[in-house]
Image (cartoon, rainbow over all chains, first blue to last red; front, top):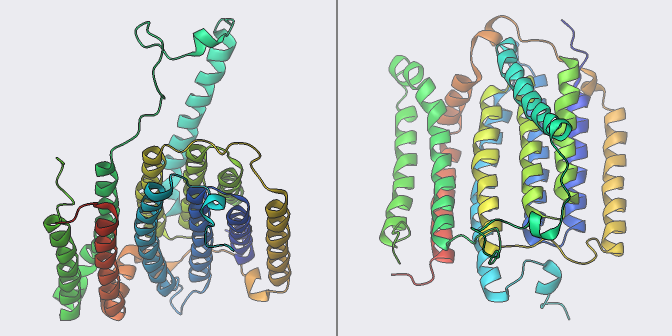
Length: 109
Length: 125
Length: 168
């Protein structure tokens, strides 16, 4: 059964998602949405890992599970990052009463 | 194995279809009323609405939610361990499978004790 | 199954665009959940069942709930006034467009990427990915797992210190 799908299909989706996340980080001013776009870029990288793991089959035809183990670690790091990052954003909001990054640029000049 | 997911797909299609069909039907069958600001405002027993519709949450909720995310990850790691433990440790006799999971749990237990001692899980303020 | 790939890839990409374009942060968060659901379906199409489930459980279930909590907690209004600055939008279009061009160029010349997705056969189809990942995690990668445990410990300490105003 030929599905007609190739590795490039998945890599293209991953690239498009990464570009969307990149554009979001540059365009948006709300720090929480910027944080979400960072997560989107991280997920795009995850899709690349899974795609390469699936297509890089070993001698017995099984996917290369090392890539999926790496994805486990990435998801863990992302969860810890979100927890600490959001705690920092809440602390920032308490001090400055804003989530607009243009308002928090006091280190400029 | 992917064929086993076809029921899930069918369920997604039915659920989405039901939601869309209900929305379309309510637009087609319902009467159009004239809208004005008074009619669109929230109904609070006849009083004028006070404050915002979205209430702000207390900080206590989000501290618990963050700790939940961190300990959720622990379970994520223990699930593949539980699935493969019998095959690896009992048959293969590999002690590393047992002790690495044990020390992982101990490390996270220290984290739990810290949160407990600092009063992060206490509800009253 | 090819049309399913296109449906779920479109879901992931449309969700991603929704995150960037929605003015209200709550709508952005929901668009993000849609994007993650599409990605999880793509993982399952790649025979990575555990990872796909994890994507829904951890990302869509836990992390996005945390995001929604924070949005509710801080009571963030939609961005007011002009949403996108001219300079930042132009810069973002240039950078993201350049990125897409580079990806397209690389993929065009990437011969290994022409490999077709064929169903798993024989012994590979018999072993589940859960037990294979569990075996790798707790034998080959036992030390990184301990490091991850320490990371979670540090993150717990950080969250408690940052959020508790008066520590005991």
